[in-house]
Image (cartoon, rainbow, N blue to C red; front, side):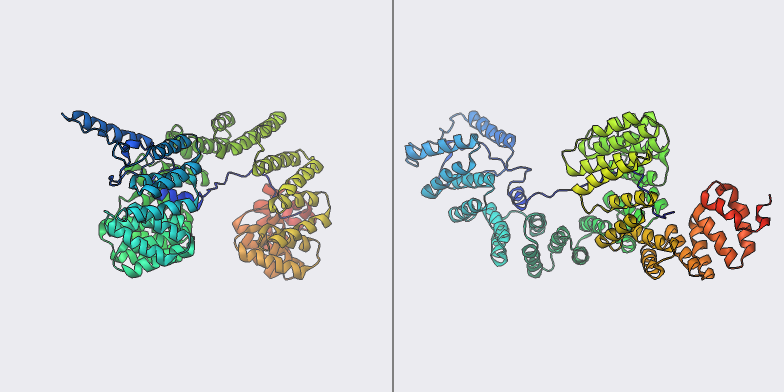
Length: 624
């Protein structure tokens, strides 16, 4: 038989995170909002050559509130100041006023490009600072880099003391890769900014990390650090840029430098990012040691505590992680992320009842409802509380988990023998996205295989491979069907193809190696394949069994016993049992063979591979 595992488990969801475009990040930097929108219209009476700064807030409600406060203040004056009349003071002529009105009408219609051209032209003609700010706001809404640059340059020219104009300028220069120019503009911005240097560097680092190309962003912050080596937030900014661009070692080195300079109250800003880098890059041992020292002084930094628990999970210190999650929840019951993490850890340890208890408080929490119902359904399904599991999966209505919830509902109906309903659940899956279509097809193929409709399963897997030609799990599933059909050439061909795509695919390495061993052919190649597989997964009992059986075929029975005993110590498997009995007998270890036989025979006697052994073992083995 093949030592490959069958495809019987429907995949669980993976989470994809999509980054916004770089220019969105520039807009966020300048406007401090989630989407660039144009603030309320400029009234003609507001236009003046010496007007005060206007807010760049894109929050219309905030803008309207400010306008309302201004109006109320004016109404409280005994002799209110008359509204400024630009036309009466000959600031704007009637044609210019008409252009302002035309621009505002275009804005209301969403014609940002045309509105910008009108406002930019007016600002240039009149040198009016309020108009140039308005043109800049509209340029942001166009997402047109050239228009944003034009408006920024004009704003700097007309109002050199406007810090926000210089802030826009250095971001634009970084986008264009002009690092030296960006540094000069940043220096001017920081001189004009009301924020202290440390805070300005922190704000700048977030924006540069989000918007600047990697080379320009790194060089920019490296030079900032050279200019201000004793400012801790400069090193933190460099780390943030490096971390954003997947340079964890560089980032961690910069954070260590920042840590040497920072005051105690700023330490959490360093260590929260450092902890994230340790987790994201599986730096388990060094992370646990470093964070452990930090948490002695900052035990109430629950962000770092939660990430420390995740490191403990990565280090397989499940008891330690569980204790830490419980401590977090004891002190901070509303720490929903920690509660969910604890529940998932308990699921991994098959503690399904405990997991359900931790998921219960999250079922109605915004942002956690779908994922909590999903994993509660998983737990209930494992406990064979199928009706409750079906109900829990039915509550999963968000797209991230809904497809997988439907797959699990189909699994349950299929396991209960309601085949029609199982397929009906699969038909509910929307196949607008290719990955969802693949999931549905794979589930159908698995069901067909269980129904022993192997040709239909193969046909469905072929449909998947038309969508994803390099889908190795599907290729492996196909190979297993071919093996069961006795179509060994197809089986071998598919596994060789899998190894062409991924030379380190352990299942293919072991499957093909064991195939050669069983057929007693290409044993040298089998040894190469199995050695590579064992190097990748040294504690995989399937591979240990294959290697042991290889040495059995090579008549090196002592080596065979060594590998087979290791495999059986990991998993008391019927195939390993059969192999080990034979190796003991060939290696003249009859006593060990008899002891093993009498201990496990009743457990494995119904297996075909074990039943065949009865003709080989000594007669005494068969005595009760």
